[in-house]
Amino acid sequence: MHIPTHILSGWICGNFIPSFGPRERFFCMVAASAPDLDGLSLLGGWECYYDWHHVLMHNLPFAVILAALLACFSRPKLTAFAVYFGLVHLHFALDLLGSGSDWGVDYWRPFSPVSIRWSAGWEYLSWQNYLAAFACIAAAIGIIYWKKRTILEYPMPKLNRELVDFFLKLARRHG
Image (tube, rainbow, N blue to C red):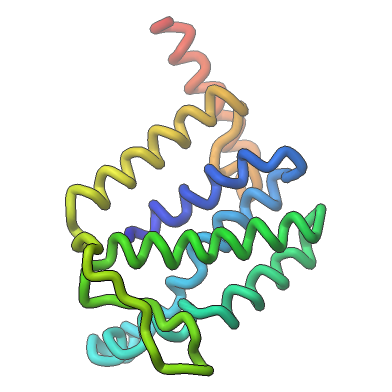
C-alpha cells in the first residue's frame, strides 16, 4: 500500500475518536505509517530492501513499542494505546492487501521467521491501491468540511486554518 494512503488512513481514523486532540490525530498518522520506516533499508541497495522491508518494523513487538511510546504523550493513554496499536495493525492488513503477492508480513519476528502472506493481495501499482488512495483523499476532504481541520492541524496550524478557510469559501461559492 502507498505511504500517503497509510498516513491518511491514520488521520481519518483519529477523527472518529472524540477524546483525541490534534496531537493524538497526528500520532494516528505516525502509527499508521511508521512501519514503513523499514523501507529505508533501500539505502543499502535493492537486495537489502527486499530482505528487510516488511520485516524489521512489520511485527508485533514493533506494534507494542510504538503504540506504548506514542500513548505516553497522549490523552487518554489507554484509549490512545489501543487506537495506535490498531492502526499499526491496519497498516499490516493494508500491506497484505496492496503490496503484491510476493510480500508478506513477518508478524512474529524476532520470535519466529514465519511470514504471513495472502496470495489474493493486489499489486502495488494496481487500480485497487489507487482507488483506496482516492477514497482516503475524498474522506480527508469530507473531514475538512465536517470537522473543520486538515492533516496539517498539529504540525502547521496556521496553514491548516488557511486551507480550511479556502475549502469553506469554495463550498460557499459553489453551493
